Each structure stands twice: as structure tokens, then as C-alpha cells.
Amino acid sequence: MIQAVDRALRILAVLQGGRMSLGDIAGRAGLPPSTVHGIVRTLLAHGMVVQERDSGRYRLGPATLRLGNVYLDTLELRARVAPWATELARRTGCAVRTGVLLLGEVVVVVHEPRPDGTRQMPEVGIVIPAHACALGKALLAHDPAAAAAVTLRSMTGGTVTDRTVLDAELAEVRRTGLAVEVEEAVLGEYGLAAPLADGAGDVVGALGLVVPASGWPLDPAAHEALRAAARAVSRELGAPAWPPVSWPPSATA
Image 1 (cartoon, rainbow, N blue to C red):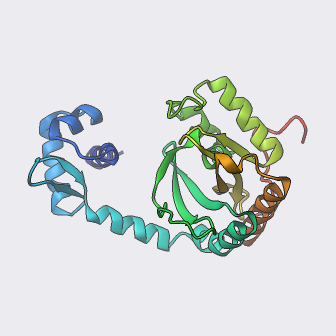
Image 2: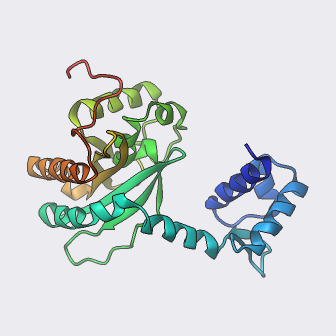
Image 3: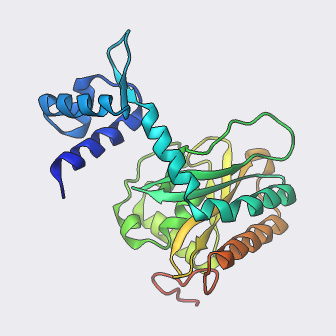
């Protein structure tokens, strides 16, 4: 590992938390202020970080957005999912999200709003703790290393923070192919998600429905529509089977 690169990435990860002073960054990154200062000055020169004139605080810069857009443009999953997400939203009346796993969190790469004409915020790029959303559980269920490493922090009173409970939920995801979230990341928001697999049989993303409290529980037709869409996307990605082969093998498989 190259130390300077590792430290720069740690600083960028810390700045995901918002505007910060140099001291705040150093404290959260666990680095000496002098080291952070030198790295931040380099990141400033490349547009990865900007400094606010009035407060002197630092935040992520526009270059990070450009990199994110390049990533999205080259993501085959995004291209494959988009038409299915539109149709899934139409069939269920729900908003649809597709997410990928990154360092214990889910990054939303596709968002199809509810087809009811209401004003909704675009969600591509939002980050949600993996253990606190249906998308994340669908992903963690098939990634033992990520599941073991995830930090179980509380987001709402409903967030699962007991590892034994989470492990049981992940086993259920492997058994049924569907993950459930009940107001664990945002109060009043429920979710249902399914894993997406590629040609190697690896889970590379998750497709999910986002449901307000008034629309929960979903009827069986919505469950089947989600399963069908996840199966179709996985087939287009070359997956040999769906649901993906369980890890560890399900007792009921």
C-alpha cells in the first residue's frame, strides 16, 4: 500500500461528512495536522477539495463529481437496469433504486421516481449504511467479508444494531432472494430489495422498491414484479442462475 495515496483517500472519505476545519479532518482521519495540511493543499490544486472563503473550512470539490459521473457512465449495471427500473416503477407504483456496495455503504446508481407525478428529489449518488437498508442487506447477504466488517451504527430506532439479528436477516435473504427494511435508515420509509448477479455468479448490485409507510406492506404482486426484474437484469448480465448461489449454503436449499 502506498501511504500517501492511502492518506489522501482517508481524507476524502472523512470529507463525505460535510464541511470541516483542518483540525476536524486530522482528528477524524487519525493523522497529524501537518500531514493533513500538505495533502489537502495538493487535493485543492486538483479540485478534489475546495476551501470556503468565509469560514476557511474544507469540503469535497467538483473533481470528485466528475469522477463519479465517469464511473456511472462506465457502469454496465446502470445501463442494464435503467429500462427495467422504469417498468418496475410503473408496475408497482413505487420508487425504484439500484445500489452498489462501497466500504460498508450502498451508493445509489439508478433512481426511478414514483410514477405518481409528485415532486421527488433525485437520489443518484446518495449513500446509505448497508446494514440499514434493504439494498444493503441484499448485497451483504452474498458478501461475507463485507458483512463481517460493517459497523452497526444506529440511524433510527428501528435500525438493526445487533449482529446476531442482522446475521439471521441475511440468512433469510439468501433463502428467499428478498431483503426487507422497516424504517431503519429513514423514518416512514420501507424497502424491499433483491440481489443482481453477473456472469461469474457474483452479486454486483441490488434492485429495490422504496415504499412510504402508507404503502406498506406491499402486495404479493409487487414482490413477484421485483423478483422478475432482478432475474431479468441478472440474466442480461450473464448470470447462470437467480437467486445467486447462497453463501453459506442455505439449510433449505
